Length: 281
Length: 172
Image (cartoon, rainbow over all chains, first blue to last red; front, side, top):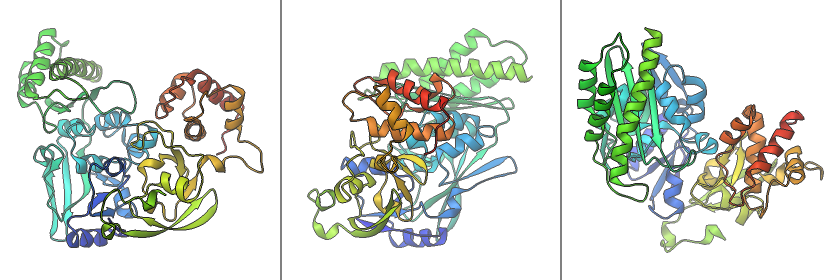
């Protein structure tokens, strides 16, 4: 396995163009599991940890541009106000040790349906900034996930940053696991209000993370924005979220449990968000 | 040694990489198989076996060390990525034969039984105090959640950390 160590972003892009087979590695919290357990044998690793540009984030025109090298720990400490849903999801990633090295871009690169970043990225309509020596392009988050552990990146492309709208309303994330720390989600859900638009994201309950468009449309039309949350509306929202999922039975949980838990999490997160909405209204 | 194990991969495809590791203040020049983790480099190449291998997949915390002052899992950290970084292991906590306050507190509170998770627990505990995460027992439990103890010494671990916090000692 070759080990490639670019020191600048330009160098990283050149190396990836020359070695499209190289697996990018940042914190290593996902890539190293594969290597240690011999699930994959990369022919080359492209170490992005020394590329200083990636470790920065900026806020511009209501959007956070989150560099691919910003750790979950930093996101939680520095961006919980701007990106509450993503920060909440980040707090559930692995453990303090893993959050010190893991990144949102790494979650996207791995593209596991169970990744904790995905539901809030979907709920907020994030975009992935992909770059290669050929140029840069923005990929809508809904176009990014292409299958189990497959994403829309071309072989010569790297993730430069993720662009996430700064929150304008309540955002919540919920995750089911067998314990509180160091678990991969059995199922997960995120909700985000942007004005009177509702965003959703479902995790670990389909071949890819996905939105629940019918549930979003239902809520936008059925909500009475000035009054208390109608219990029937909340229940129906949960059902529509559940109906948008397509889970399987696997080692972490059953299809039926995932469907049930999604309906519950959708109702709960909506209830939390509604409490915030009424408090701020 | 771990870096000699090719796991059935033809040797020709296993690249070597030169790395200088700074561990507990001393520099070590190593020639490693590019796939070697920091954990295996510490244990098998440098003979520092205080850092333990529990799961090798980031699920137990036994291999916790500090890299540039932050706690990380050495099993999920590639040794080659540690060039120029300061690595601190359990062997680096005691100074001049005097145990670190956290080590002493673990002994005093019987905060272990078999001892296998203890190095990782202590490294995490030292970092937790430096991070300012020990405000309450709940906070301690939450921010120690990356370290499993199969013997179930959790209550005594929390007591040890609480004592060091109250004594104001958190110099890592």
